[in-house]
Image (cartoon, rainbow over all chains, first blue to last red; front, side):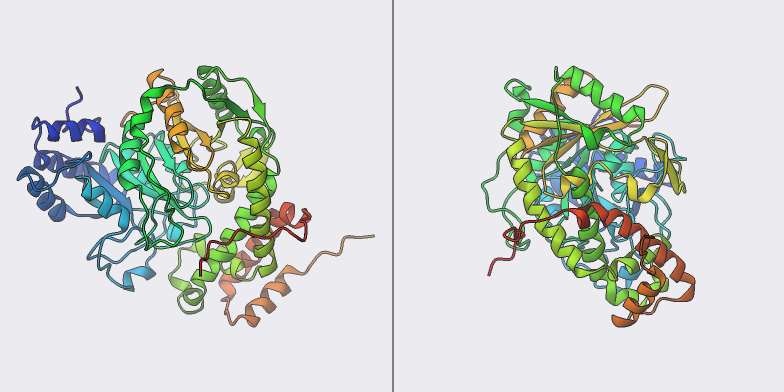
Length: 460
Length: 62
């Protein structure tokens, strides 16, 4: 059994140890806070460490006040989640002058109701308009697999904190790939659930039409444990589904029997570096899948997702662009300004196309249950890198790390990223894409890959 | 016939004026660059044809 006080301990390991009395929550939290203090000068994952709050909560657990499937499990959240008593930074300097959160975000409350302990807020790209994990105000989060490299973003701190072994579990948000890109570049398991499956109430928005929230962890069990704890209708998020919860943890052991698995060809093979395509090939081989399918109009979907993001995100920030332009991160400011000037007709067309694309994908899911695709076109770029070569073409890093994630989140399909560690090299992830509300299918596939030793996410 | 390329710099200046967004001179070049990039990325969407009957799937529930 893994030592529940070690950086390798999973959320499941810790909860079992605390539940059985083999470990005290207080000891778990103290060792977590020590690890954070030790790792932070290097990885810069946290913007807020809640030592006092976490210790108080742990003491309450040890006195028998809280129980649940995540009892004693330390977790941290991207700093766009409300944390009672703090301003919700959302990666910005401007929001520090904004309101102080009166209560925790819905998902923080749900995880704590399941026994978990919030230990801090995590660094992120400003206002989530980012794929790199860099931030001009708070410094970049650094990839624990190689600290000269990007974590990916915008949930950069959420990736760094889990990869460094500071916490076993973090929450991020994903509008176009912001959970999946850091999961891939930091070599972690990440779950972007179905659009509307988990409540976004109490999170600072970016693009309402595309915003999702979900967990990042080092094991598939931890994704399922936290996902199950966070499911459920929430009247405070108008997009949140009122479908009954569908627990995924109990399905993990079912294996991949009966699942029709295919590889996304065409768009998802173009522009990728060899390591991204090799990762998909390795995963497909381990799953015994050789069937290729074409996701129709994926390039149009990426284009439409980009336009919805640019226009909706920029409209949200227009008042601050007018009054506090100098306080924006230089890497978001001019993109937001340009987005504010794009024709509204493009937005309407993108939304109409979204419906057509959804219908086409629903048809595709009559033939398959799970689709495999690269999560990122390459491994982690160097910090500060502006351009990269993909398929021999020089392209901006910022706009292109989400090349393969954007066409999937565009219609809210659930995705698990399975990380492949590459000895002597950097990790890279594969997207396991399922039909709407079929998170359990994607998690079953990821669990199979983990069991077979194909996918893994050790602490760095 | 030569392609009739839009004057993006002018478009950015005029559109910003129209919505009351002041773009400081030091930001202007990057705004223009980003607008050009957006135009390029938007192209696949702009080229696609949609049926008149196709409506979006709004979430708003009265």
